[in-house]
Each structure stands twice: as structure tokens, then as C-alpha cells.
Image 1 (cartoon, rainbow, N blue to C red):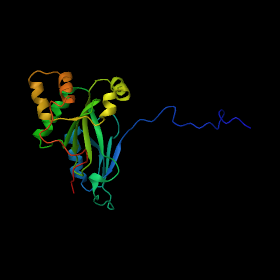
Image 2: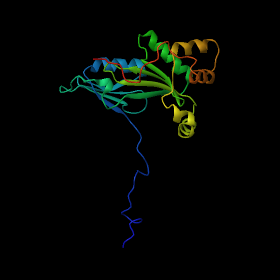
Image 3: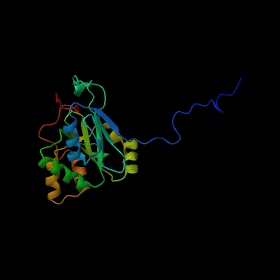
Image 4: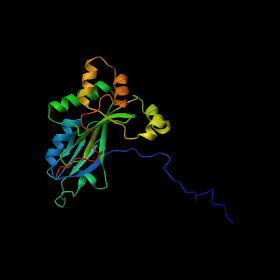
Length: 208
């Protein structure tokens, strides 16, 4: 009997060097509105923009979000409860920049539909003009290695992976009182900044 545990027939379950996540692509009925929204919310600007599509980036990549306006695209049915992508996410490395961005967007009339301290991140969730979720987050540890270890090892995350809801205005007020990022994070995890109304679930809002 031949040995199938060695040699060229060995199954390779994953690549030696894994590819990095590069971009997300959306079909849209609101191309121009989507382009404008992503620029305001996440600083994404078009590298190429036509009547039928746009490729947007906010860093050195050629694009991070692609938007396709194909004639065959139809309105989604029951989008909030349909299987598929729930949200894309963008991360700030600095807590103050993250919270300042909330205030900036609020002044522009753009507010999150849900805010959660997941333990690994503090996250605000928005809905784009098509009803796709967009998370704006800051790493709670300021270090991906530490947050990954905590996510893997902690009983706290295992018992409550969703986290605690918070009211971002209460975070702004806490910072104005002089509380640090770590103090605000601890308070959010303790439920000190819960909104008056806790969302019933984490589903996306109905747009159409």
C-alpha cells in the first residue's frame, strides 16, 4: 500500500502565503448617491468614474470599493433579513479621530443605526444609500495582535460576542469630562453608556 501522507498528493488545506482582502464590489441603483456618500463617510474618492460604474479608494490601493450600475440590477427583496453581506468595515487607529468622525458625520446628518462595543473594537454601524452596512471602528486594544489574542482566549468574548450597545453622544460627553479612551471603553463594556432604546437585533435597517 502506498503512503499517501507524503509526496505530491498531500492535500494543502490553505495557501502558504494567503492573499489579502483587497476590495468589495456592490451592484447599485444609486451610483452617484453612493459615490457621494462613501466620500463623506470614509473619504473614498473615485479613481475611475463613469455613468455605469465607479472604483473608489481612500489609500494607496487602486480601489477598495467598486460600484456597478448594471441595467439588469433590481431592487432587493427583504434585504435586512436576506442571506449575504451584512457590512464592510473601516478602521481608525486613533480613538479621538474615530469619535471626532462621528461628530463630523452627525453634523452632516449621517448617524449610525447601531453602536456596539465588541470588546475587540468599538464600532458604529451606518447604512449606505442602498441599505448596505458600513462599520466605522477603532481597535479597543490599539494592537491587532492583542485584540486577536483576546478574541481567541477570553471567556468574556465567548459568552458575549456581540458586545454592549452604546450611545455615541454619551461617549462624546464622557470624553469632554476628561475620561480617557480606556476609561470610556471600560464604561461601555459595563453598560454605562447604553442608549435609551436598545435595538431589538443587529439586522440592517429597511431602506427600500
